[in-house]
Image (cartoon, rainbow, N blue to C red; front, side, top):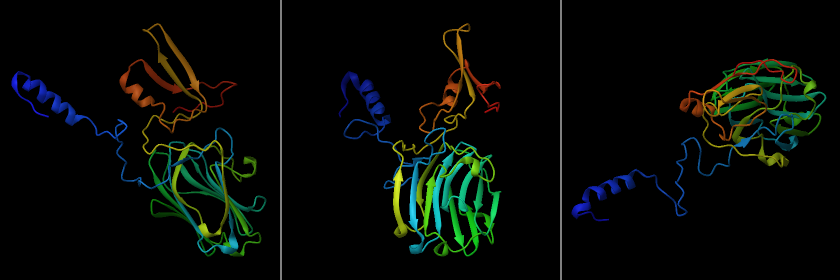
Length: 288
């Protein structure tokens, strides 16, 4: 493009504007830069919740007689402080394991012939950042690692997977395969979270995998203000000081960033949030 004559200044301004525009692909859409933590070939992150219930989003089965690796790892992100990350069992009556969150921190519940326990450890993970999590069975021990650091080591609580009385293990993501009342310590199963780069036990020993028809993907990036726990109250000014509307958000998913209250709050002085009052139809009285 050449500039000259009486329109030189306008032409230079046009060139500057073109340089400031983001690059476009052949369809005319701006190309989105991929953060370095997300590889180009990585499958999309999976949302762990089907809704307010305890149904898992995916169930995998493994033949333990073919197991050569007894560890599982994944990356995990959430703003939600409580729920089930994954459940595993060979028998839902007397041989099961749960990894979840309580008050934002990892919690393990397990029940087998060696141990029956509930224990929490590690840092809070409900900060909206991606965290690396690993669960490993080593001899008679169960180890939990977060961001490449061991945060829990339980001894004399397990045995070799290949010697389990029942050779088939199930792993369920984001839910339970028995009633929540059977947990050792009550926990709300539903967890608004995302999971990616997961590697479960030994892929060669996997028999089957099934996924919910409601399985959803998560966006790569996350910002504060996109998660609203049940019972959150929001008030919006409609037109002027005399017109307003208020309501309680109950069970709203927001991991896909379709609603960003922080952005709205930063742009308007007429929007504010606080907790819902206690009422017969609303059992939540927690400020968020």
